Every structure is written in C-alpha cells, then in structure tokens.
Image (cartoon, rainbow, N blue to C red; front, side):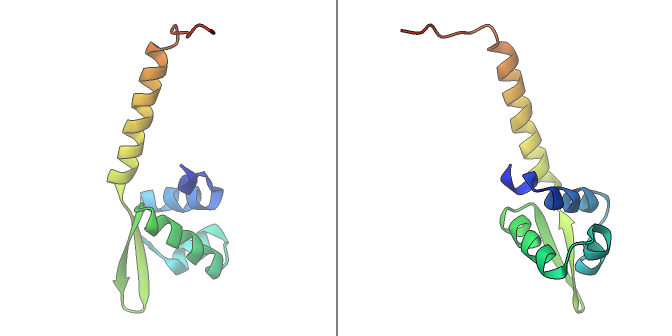
Length: 93
C-alpha cells in the first residue's frame, strides 16, 4: 500500500501499465528529476512491482501485473469480508 500511496509512484505504475519505458521516458512523462525518479524506481523494484530490462546503456522498466493482481484479490477479499460482517457488532463488556 505504501508503495502505491505516493502520487509519483502511482503515476509511474499507471504509465508502465500501458507500455515498457526507460528512465528517460519516465522523466519526460512525469516531469520528475532523474535522481528523484531513480529513488522511486528503487522502491518499486524492491517491492517487486516492477522488473528491469537492460537495453544497451538504458534500463527499461516493466510492470509485474501479477503483483497488482494479487493486491487486487486481497482488497476484494477484504471488501467481501466487510460486507458480510457489517451486521456483526461485538458487545462492549
């Protein structure tokens, strides 16, 4: 959740959902500085949300859709649990 809560990281993930992009593309699309973008990409890589693909002197980033699908499934399960538990109320002692 924290990984995607940052507006810039969410923008990056949205862009990568459409196509595989290199750092230069991401800088152009987001307007972020290269160092700032690199820090955010490190967070996304370490969280397993994106993979890297070296291509000459460039590094391309691609989204790992299975990670997002797993998050989606967890949230769907929580929503369903909340629907069925809406009438459950624990009595105070």
